Image (cartoon, rainbow, N blue to C red):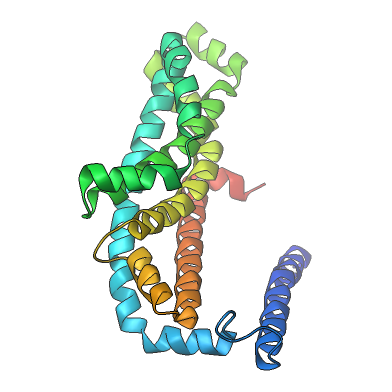
Length: 254
């Protein structure tokens, strides 16, 4: 009971902080400290959100499709790369430095090139999402594999276990925490990467919608899109956390 009360109290802190920020934001806008065309009030933002709700949902569907497809492929590549680099040391020496180098290239610089190479359809958006999402998975899972209990691995080897059995019973459970930590980062990167690619060109999506309302100086709609992107990202992070609790029930008992 005490633990539950403590969890409720701790969750109130961010809620109260957020409410305070919204109140201050509204006062700053209403009192004219910052002009409305530069910083729309939360009320104006919500009005724009409600007014364009149907349009926003249509663009959200496109962005989510791009993000989910890219995320699935990126996670698959990252996980497969981690398995390969853990199992074969030459692969680690050959590919790990290249993987790190790929993350030093700004995505803002890559996005226009992808649009130039693949056009304005879905392909460049998916490719950019893949580039931004595979790295946290590859590095996190690889670190999880290499942090597994060496004594447990040696014990299974002494008992005649195969590499597949060691992988299944030791390395996979040991790497799950790092996998889900990387996945929480990747899902946010997926949404941001898709929106960023849409800025460079496209026909539908939240990034396309943002560029249109920006050119028309409708900053209340701009903030509405930012709110929607944040909500979608938080929902995806929550989904990952829920999956983690279901797949790692032993963590809930700690």
